[in-house]
Amino acid sequence: MIPRETIAERIRSHGVKPTTQRLEIAMLLLVAPRHMSAEQILADLRKANSRISKATVYNTLNLFTQHGLVREVSADSNRQFYDSTITPHHHFYNVDTGELTDIKQGDLIFSSLPELPAGTEAQDIEVIVRVRNAVEARNVA
View 1 (cartoon, helix red, strand yellow):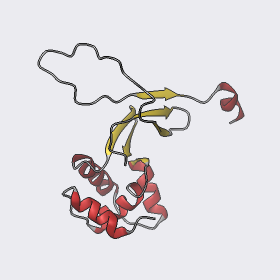
View 2: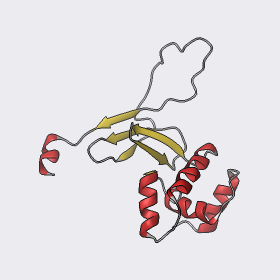
View 3: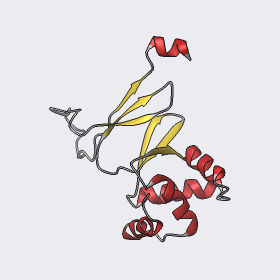
């Protein structure tokens, strides 16, 4: 387990004041490579008897995203994930389980991109490979 003060320093180094509520959220999300939705974070906070509001969770996640502490990943139209691994990488998204997992760096390689629209430049490439459980696994459930 990463000490709370180490997480507080990480937050500070990104220009964010480490308030008690921000630290509670960061201790869930930033202690290891994780993908969590705001709802998952809120549920874990509730299990720990935290009284942080839903609005505070969303505001904190937006702040962490703006300051480069986490990456926001849009896995589907209903769910945003917050990824503690901020280096560029791609994901598998299991539509049956809602699980988001990293694709190892170098396992997905692009040889070229299409011509970009005039006056633009590539900022980032993010690929989400949507998968579902094999038929046998879905029938067992």
